[in-house]
Image (cartoon, rainbow, N blue to C red; front, side):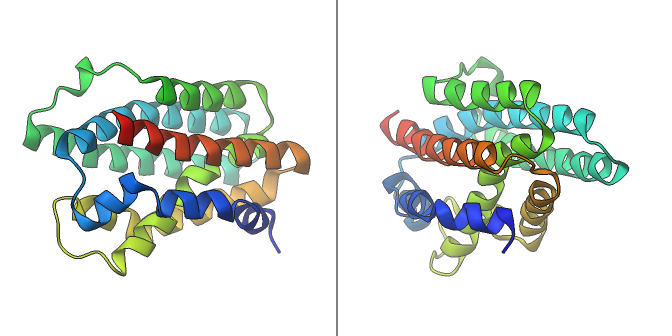
Length: 205
């Protein structure tokens, strides 16, 4: 079994905690307060900008051309994701530039950027893969049961085959580049914990 698949299974408890989180269930059934959703998207946009920078650092450290090309494609995927946020912001009159990062957002972005700046490519991939795999998992799981609602666009974004392909690309990079299995496991687990904490903060805002 691949390292990426093993790490995902080792963190199944946190994946289920995210899927069953009240914030995520509110997205699924459409009952989530709109202001909380807007606040979450604004924080997520801040996070995604840091995520793109972490990809750029991984690209710079990639030891081969295949890695450079793959990380470039993944950066493009983040740009597409940010367009979802920009579209919602435009429709609802949200000034994303005026939003300050919350404590949970800072904790996650600082972890990502510190890992990307100081660790090897395999560990960087381990820190970044949980975001992609978790959101693909959430989108695909919710798409099976959720009906039309105010947040269906969010579900559909992460349920697409295109997003699944991006998640698999990053998992393949993780499998290719990991050299320190223990360090990768720690980074992966920490990222999953920060994902759940991000939903905690969004629900409490």
